[in-house]
Image: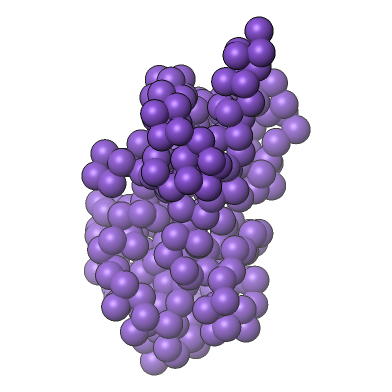
Length: 256
């Protein structure tokens, strides 16, 4: 019996360790940090992976927590809102990229930030207000991409927004040039349209076929370009897809 308890304790130690980790971790580091035999750690991780409690990156052999753990919390889903679900994903993404990550919803014709994970490098982003116009923010463009054509056209014709920078999109025809790319690729960009020097990428969270929120990554344009916009876009879209799959799997009513 003591053997079983020891193995259970080690398994829980590994789960707790991965929960606290800011990025995926390999077997050797887990074993070293927890003072456990590598063979033991490997066997436990293989078992946890079979139950979808951890996920393995096939390219790096590193591990992170899997969706199975959240699935078993479905009994308390009625007390869980989108921020609760998205928060650990957003925190992980922010730590991984070293940039500010934000959860946004459409609210009264604007993009409202309802959760933000910041890093030590988020000085420029931290000065921004939690509400931004749809036409000049990456998350706002995500929301606009789901609007009916007539509603979208009226939005730009009425011009109920400001031109924050010389790059801000204020014309319907200019937005339509971006719309196809946003729809096809699932990613929108704010290229110094909200604030000079600031670049932002955003991707949608979907539930029952509709866009219910968007996650965005914000930072200085030169730094994001140096890190690689393609790789950042890929990570962002993967996180949004995981959250979308999870809320669909749990069949949650979306509450904010």
